[in-house]
Length: 218
Image 1 (cartoon, rainbow, N blue to C red):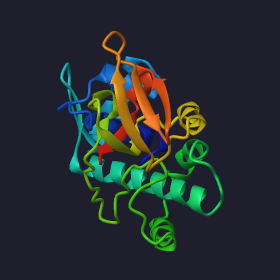
Image 2: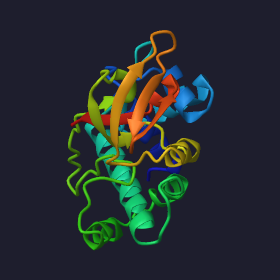
Image 3: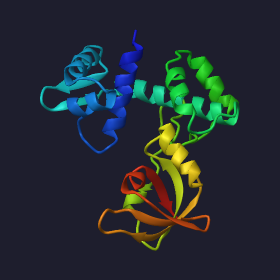
Image 4: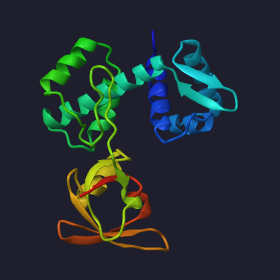
């Protein structure tokens, strides 16, 4: 039987592995889980014993096929619940993450499949992230961070890297939502802050904001 904590570690390893690294380091995992490296190492060893991960000392950890299956199942549940909370219960996109963190651990596969059907098989969650299907297939979405955008080009907002309530509320304050058209007016060489135009309003965002907003070129 897999525990809630083990599921959270598996999900964290999966998300870190998407950042382009062949293996996930213990320190990166510990930071993501807000714990000590020794605690992360102990959990990695448990996951390895259960067949969910492969761990090599001083090299890092990768998920096995079984581990990836678990991770995609958790992510599917999380993102489907976010859609349900926003579309059916009137939550805003900055309110759903913590609630979905609790709901993602529900074990009933029938419930999740019925939820998927009830929502008419959504492809993306309220933050623009793709939802894995019943078989664990998750489409790869072509996207670029605002911090990597080119001056003079026009993009559409298609997702966020930071789904914290504080960041989403910041976007709401500046009328930036999924589908918003964003024109890159000027990139400041000194601090990489970016002047953008959204809905005919021009303002400057910091590099930390630019690193957390996903765009697609129009």
